[in-house]
Length: 203
Image 1 (tube, rainbow, N blue to C red):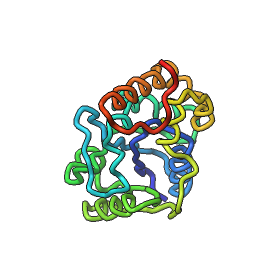
Image 2: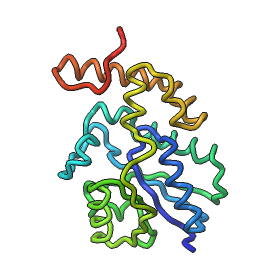
Image 3: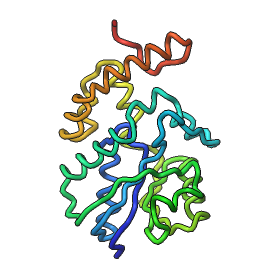
Image 4: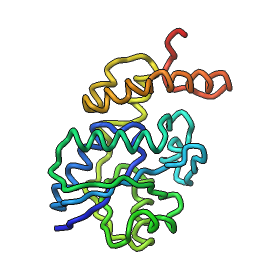
C-alpha cells in the first residue's frame, strides 16, 4: 500500500479515460493522497519531444487550456468522482525536462502510469532514470477515449463530446467556451495553411 501516489497527463481536457486511470491507480495502491502532475504546463512555451507518437502534444490546437484551467478542471473532476481520498495536490509535471521533476513531485512518491504507445514507454524510462519507482497499470494497443477525438468533436460542433467527459467537467468546459476557443484555433491554423482535423462548421 502506498499512502501517496502520483499520476500525470496533459488533460486537454480531462476525459473519462483519464478518470479510469486515476481511479485504478488509487484503488490498486490503496492511496490516501494523490499528486496529479500536469504536463505541457507552460502553454506559451510548448515543448516538443522527439518521439513521433507524442508529436501532436506540442501543437497549439492540441493545447487549448491553460495550466490554471486544467488545475481547476482536475479538481472539479476529482471532487465529483469522490474517490475516498484524504486529499490531493495538482502540480506541474515537466516530463520534457525530467531533471526538474523533483521540484514538483518528490522522488519518494511512486508514479503510476499506463502504456499505449512508444512515448509512454519512453516516459517510463525517463522516470526510472530520474529516480522514480514506476508502476505501469496496463499495456494496451488502443485507448477507449482520446483527447484528440474529443477536441475534434468540439471543433466540428458534435455535441457527442459530452459523452466523453463527466457532467461536472462538461459544465466547466461550457463555462470556458472551449468549443469556441478550439474552433478559433482551428480557423487560424487553416488560414495559415495548416491541416485541421475535422471539417469546420460554417462561421
